[in-house]
Amino acid sequence: MIAPTGPFVPWGAVLFALAVLGFGAFFWRAWRLYRYMRLGRDEARIDHPWRRVRDELVVYLGQRKLLKRPYYVRGLAHAFIFWGFMVITLGTVDLLVDGIFGFHVPGTGSALFAWTIDIFAILVLASIALAFIRRAYFRPPRMHVALDGYVILALIGLLMVTLLVFEGAGLAAGLLEKGYTPPPIANAILKSIFSRDLAGVVFPVAWWTHVVTVLAFAAYLPQSKHLHIVTTLPNVFFRKQTPRGALGLIEDIENQETFGAAAIRDFSWKQLLDGYTCTECGRCAMARSYLPTRRPTRPHPRITWSPSPKSSGRAPRVRPASKRAR
View 1 (cartoon, rainbow, N blue to C red):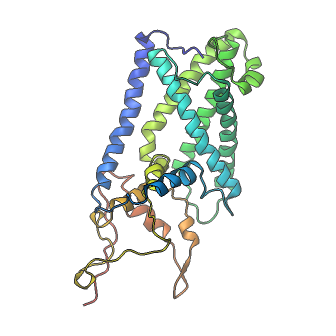
View 2 (view 1 turned 180 degrees about the vertical axis):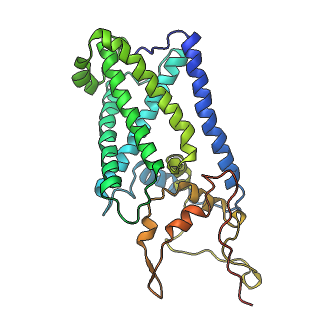
View 3 (view 1 turned 90 degrees about the vertical axis):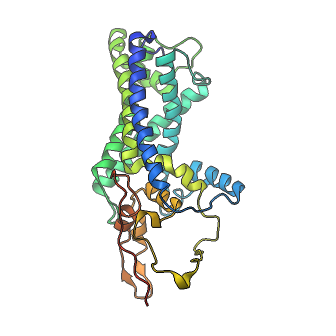
């Protein structure tokens, strides 16, 4: 679509300023979180590089851990949101580049991209509806439901709706650029809704709403539990390559004064990254049997509170470590 910004002055410059503010807020907060993470002790996580690349492809991009029992339906919905987020990100980069500099990202005018972005927009909307219904009416006891989750769902839903609306209005207004494939769903369903005059009004409103929502989402993301959208990528790459359940040795255990963690520096940088990546889903609370007493336990509140300073400008402290018996 032809961007409604026109020449760089004035609207291209306005969009550029908004992009600097949105992404500037994101990177400022991300830099602070990185500095907190570096307070943790060093830990080597660069062995078996090819296994780590495989994990990125299978676990991160393929969403393998979500596509298994008993998470097939909601896991697939989450995967659709994730994959749609990646496709929409490419489309958003194209919108920003076109709106500010006046050219397009290569490949965004192809039939493959047009079909992919429209199909995923519908799949993401359906997945968001499923997530909302589950949170509102079928919430499992382990799930911690907060306003933050609804805010993120609303922002993603608004992005999908405004995308389809400005596509349909742009087609009705004759703003499809020469050589570009018409977005199929918008062309088949939404184009006929708008008259040419109405489309000329709706298109810029929907386009600007979409772009500003993207920038607001970028500024808000590091403040929310959905930071895992970004941190999962390095977290999967740096995960342990040792057998599951294997424990590391405690160096010089006879002379240790304390065990566990009493302050943020007692965690490794990877453990702090784990805290950033926690989705607060509550699945850790499903492992409720505490051996050998079989007493119920709720580890979820401690995990989300202890190592992660996402919601605070200060480095948090955790429960004191137990003193070694003398």
